[in-house]
Amino acid sequence: MTTGLLLKSLVFIFVKSACSVCSCSNFAPVIRKMLIHMELPNDPMILFSVINMKLRDFYPSLDALCDDLNVSKEDIIRRLQAVGFEYNPEQNKFW
Image 1 (spheres, rainbow, N blue to C red):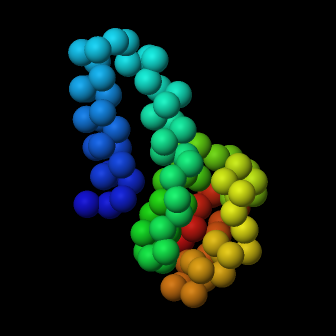
Image 2 (image 1 turned 30 degrees about the vertical axis):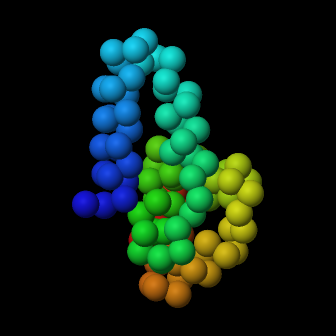
């Protein structure tokens, strides 16, 4: 199971359990914040998956992601280049 799918499954379970307490719409900002502001993984393959999920779901560019999370763009690029990935700004993803 990929990291993105695992996170989405956990969010679904969280929302389903919260639905019995109050409206799901009250939890949407909390869930979004949990997904955006998690610590970045050290494993380069998991980092690849997490960064691409965040770029796809929350950020229009790598610069926006790095600014918001207060992480070094150069560090992310270097770590992912070390395992063969490069950033494509037109598609807003590493591949």
